[in-house]
Image (cartoon, rainbow, N blue to C red; front, side):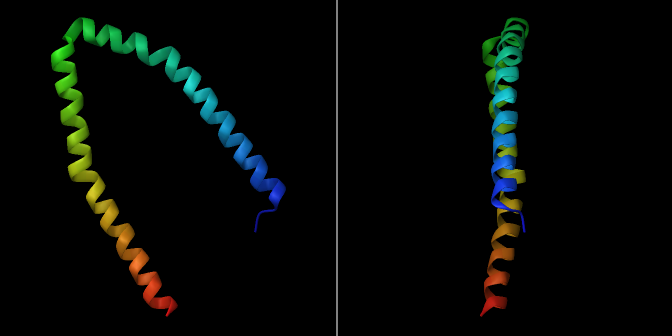
Length: 80
């Protein structure tokens, strides 16, 4: 079992890593997106991104959600 100090240090490390990732992404992503929109065009890039998010939502998320709910239900049954 981690101590409170270890939990706090882990939280602090995670927060620092996420702040660094945010700075890096804000520096890299806007120029890349601008270049993509300039080369492909705003319309097709938006459609490609929308189709990608829909595929992710329809094919990847539901099985993960079902397996998580099944594990949760089975653990509740075992507890009783």
